Length: 237
Image 1 (cartoon, rainbow, N blue to C red):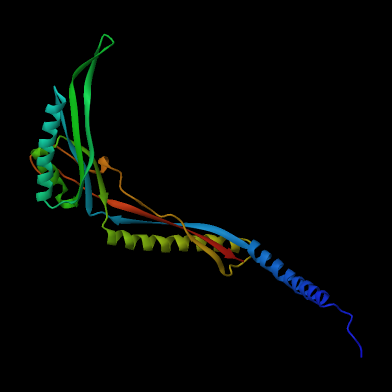
Image 2: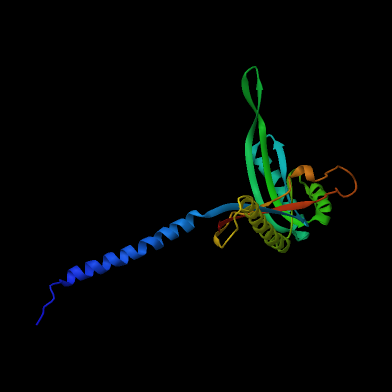
């Protein structure tokens, strides 16, 4: 009888080495495929018409004592808030409350002359109604307009975001095609896709609102909101 002199452990080691050597070409091919990729980033922008105006306004009162000022601010602010609630404005919220001393400086000396109190609120209304609502709040007791933003509704923004993504993807593909074609190469499969942080930029603030003191409703004219998207592609060639 002939007995094998090959130890089982030796056989396992030989099989392992054979398997490892068989994987080496595959690993090299995978590395080569990874290196033969082009990374491009495309950008898409879509302008959407705004239909909503977000307004921030408030009450400012000056007086001799803190209690006097705070009471006057509270009374005026309550009147403004009641008016806004009667108009069924959306997303009404307080954005700031402040009470502070008011000083004057004479001969390098600081002297207390009273107190200043403010209370600010923000809310949203359809743009066609914005001017009339602003005028009504002034009559109710508001003394300052702190800012105005123009916004599109959520459905319009969603549609614009999808269009911007399509535009960004097409832009990335076009960039890749131009580069590869100029080198005599052609695009193969897309290895990786990354959607970058998208931006929805509101219109610049106060300069886009026409605010005038006049007996008629204050004209408030909206415009467009810019929706931006960015897509990065890794394309094999």
